[in-house]
Length: 99
Picture 1 (tube, rainbow, N blue to C red):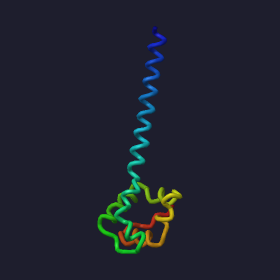
Picture 2: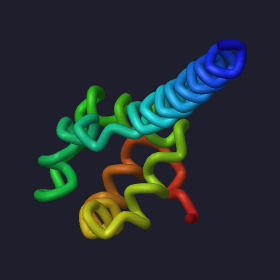
Picture 3: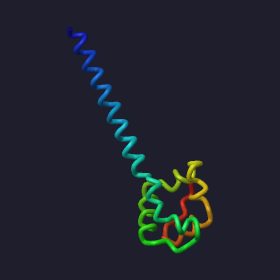
Picture 4: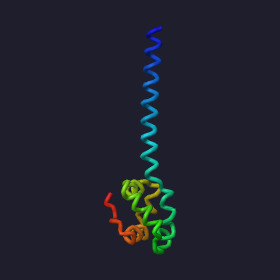
């Protein structure tokens, strides 16, 4: 009975540890949310002036290191690395990240 209780306790500890790690991963991933860049779609695609909402979102994403993550991700790289994206970042007063 004691061995079973010890095994169950260990199993519970492992489950809690795995859950804590999964929560930490979700928290980090939630900080880099490409949907935050939707406000910048027009400036990135068409070269229009960025809105304050766009700049605010870009600043937040830059603080989190997300722009480099996007630049390295094949799914987002073409959007983040294009000329209009760089112009948008510069127009918002954000230094172009060197990734």
